[in-house]
Image (tube, rainbow, N blue to C red; front, side):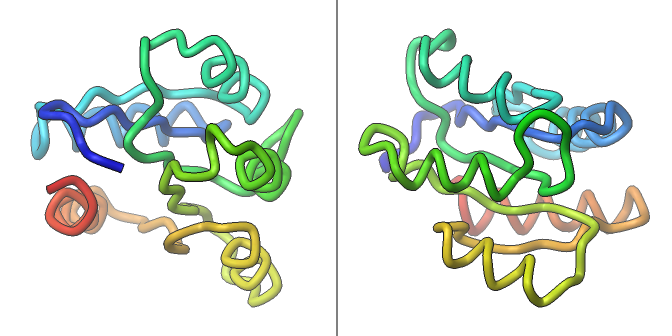
Length: 135
């Protein structure tokens, strides 16, 4: 998927603190990104269905443990929709269960990242993300 000058990233996580931290880090480290945050999978699917941003995202950062639709359910929907299956998805979650890791890859996740506990580690991860996924 060709990237625009200002990549659009969707964050799907039910933790508002995660939204705040990611927005803060992206603003400081990669300000040209447009970050949209959603609290659960149904919000994401509504956004994608109606293309409320006018185009599909360049990347989705997806938590697994969420209400309404969990991350694996979202991955299943994305995988089965020809319009959405090409969107790169990185699972970013607190789970370290091998079953979650394997299932995420089976459903098309491009990477599985365990959430960091520090702002510094998150900033380093965003820097790696921008170098490896957004350039």
